[in-house]
Image (cartoon, rainbow, N blue to C red; front, side):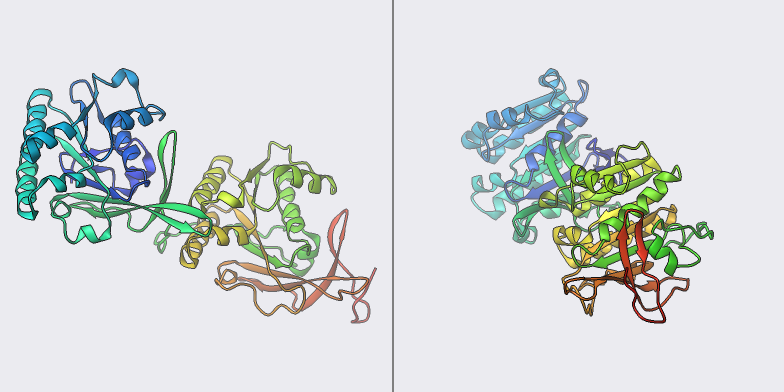
Length: 464
């Protein structure tokens, strides 16, 4: 397919294989509140030109004055373009007095007089009530589609359609492209999804893609679904220190650059502290590192770091804090990958996976994003450490219900030993991919110099 109608938002155009088909009919469907009118106006101002203006026709669904008033609050709304490149017109009075034939007549007149590049009709579904029956509406649809096809114009029909309408209403068969919008409630939060249901003669990215609505319009976060990599890529075979003394003692040769390490343990067992050692080792070596945290805000982290002589105020360190209360996994992963790319970070701490898992719509989507994040990081040689809180303080029998551990290259378990008056902590390396490690659990202590293994004394557990 040649010729595309772009939105001006790169991720959306990418999902659509370059954009909506130009000089074609596209349907933008979804229930009220999903953002159809905002997105339609985004296309309007993006594509309107004085020589090929864009027309926005409202019908009887929402007053034109309301559409324009709310549109003025959007960043892309250009008051100077209204009346020159962009035109708004109410078809409500026309269809009420002259019926569907009046709608066809008025749109035909605009096509001949203004030679528009884009026509938006909102709401198209609302026109159904003005037909005496399905037969009359099909005749109207056939005539309107024929008129539009006779001109080099792109059409975007907006409507409050649901899934049942797709199999019964004729406009779904006429449309060359169909983009669906939906809102799904996950716990106490709502997540919006966009899906391409049809794109005639063109490829597109399938699946549900998360999006947000804001002053700039739609911000889309395409679903990450890494497929098998056919072309080989170089992997550094030099071992490096983890920056954690207790872990290095168990991984004598060090670990592979680009490897992922899962640190699982109960609350207070030292997971975040191990992560801070990991990233500040890179900072002390002149490398860039990232702390992607949902557990502690930067002020809390600064207080913890200061106790060990570190500071978050470093040009080599980026702290990416997101509140777990309003977290989109899709947005978060795209943001993190963007920071990795822009900074060239060699190490990333993710604290913690539990917050990401809680924000994910489902377990499958969570695993897909985690898989993509780890593999993309590995290909660029960025090492990742991920913390995961488990409920058991002692006697841990499993790490998670969503198979997180098999994706990581290294898995380290932290546990409490005796929970009496002098509680102890133990460290166990459960897994190291493509390398050896010391088996068994080892007691460790937390000092100002970091996490240190407690020396063995005659095979018995030692205490300081």
